[in-house]
Image 1 (cartoon, rainbow, N blue to C red):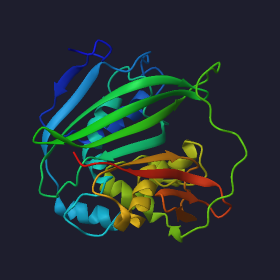
Image 2: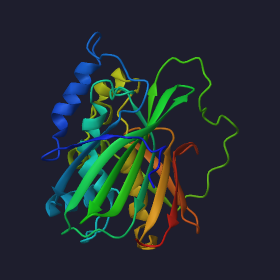
Image 3: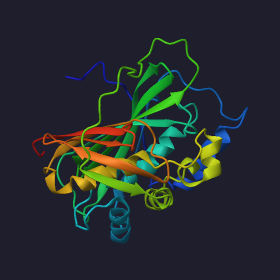
Image 4: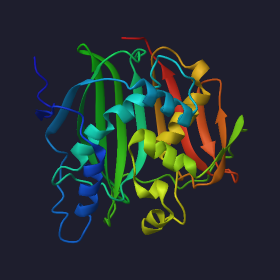
Length: 294
């Protein structure tokens, strides 16, 4: 029996993982007046896929060093995200995608590790967008990226993006209630400017908001900010010896981490975790939930 409510998507199989550079240039051109085109009112009925993606072990080691993971033959939970991100980037730069890539805000990310993935395994990826919804500052959409090995789902990531727009309201609103006191820090990290350029190198995300003072200023920040997925990866690296074989890690990105800065990492016995600045303002809040391996 088929699910009548499930959206019907056209699947397009790509011969290889797209290159990120041309897609970023396409996004920048689309931001110019008169070149961006109309934005769709719905998530695209499109699924992009590619097969046979392998791990470059030297690149994996470089990524582990940048994010603080130990060097092992297992992929960190956040590594498949950067392996498959160019595919999602290709989706987000298709004509009429509801939210323009330039200036988009990454507000949340949820990753499910169904089982450990070895560095010698070959991964197939597919990606699609869903759940376009209003927000008090514009519109949000979820971009789903799924990794499979020999037909078995081993990894799933859901990134939530906010496209800022002038809207009459009525959508999801940020919580503006009183901020609770931050938990006691278990570690403090100095985040240097090279974090932006190093993570751009290993992730392929060369958004100038992370690597250039001028680029950051053009997008409304006085200096570059760290990638949200670096912050998530750095937190998971600090929890590495406590992570189960299979789990879901959910993160909400709060205030950006300016480069340079000092951040305070905290965690609880139940595997909630957070990053705060030196004044107690939140950069990130997350949680890990164990699950039975597939």
